[in-house]
Image 1 (tube, helix red, strand yellow):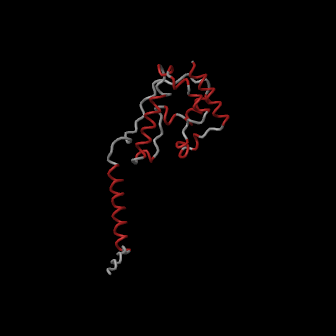
Image 2: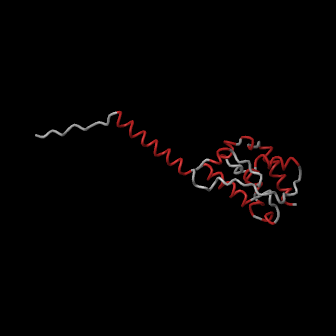
Image 3: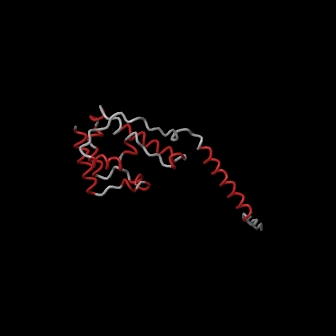
Length: 158
């Protein structure tokens, strides 16, 4: 009767070589994705017009919680230059500015998003939770959310 041959086990040097190769591949991929240009052209176009704010408090709350994505006064953190995080940051800023831009105020005042801005703040949809992880200063108390929503409604209605 034939007995099966014993299975060969990978020895630690072989496992070490495989691990080093895998790490090298990951490092090479991480280096290569840095060559993708999207997400690194951090521009802040000029501010052309802002809403007529109902109070300095409303503008200060909006600046603290909204301006990084919804104005041309974005503060670009260090990690916004490292792919793939840079792609996500750039996409968020591009989308935020396209929906509501406090720095290019005018005809945008009639858009659906502007009418709903207070609602999304009060419901906790804005600023998004993932943004608050790295920007705790944007976290608003319930009273601040209510003040911002009411102030924006008054400001944006002008």
